[in-house]
Length: 133
Image (cartoon, rainbow, N blue to C red; front, side, top):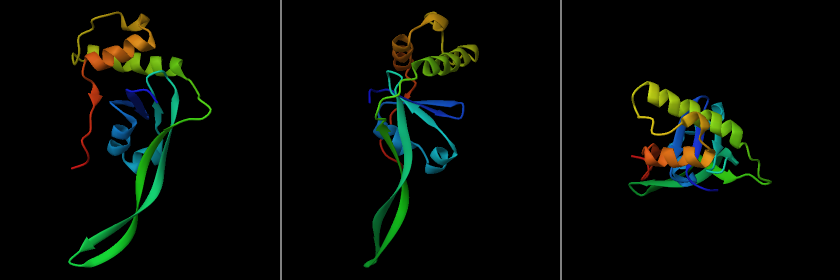
């Protein structure tokens, strides 16, 4: 899976520096309600919620509990959907230009997926997570 990772949360587009960053930031409820993730090349990624068992300790009392964790994996066999991804990123960037959040430096409508991903990196739109607070 090539970074950056693009996640479509039912129309809200987020960009992440890695699959690990996306998994840390996404909430299990978001994944359960439906989201689609893509790598830099437009490959669709599997996004799932998996239960994991953890042990908590407090004042010498230990207890085990199960929590949900978001995971992203490269889909096998690969499913490339770069045309859909290009359309979503163009729409996102055009909205950002229209709202004044970014200035258009190139022709977004004719840009390739590679050029669009370069623009996402150039504009600093990638979320980098350092763990949850």
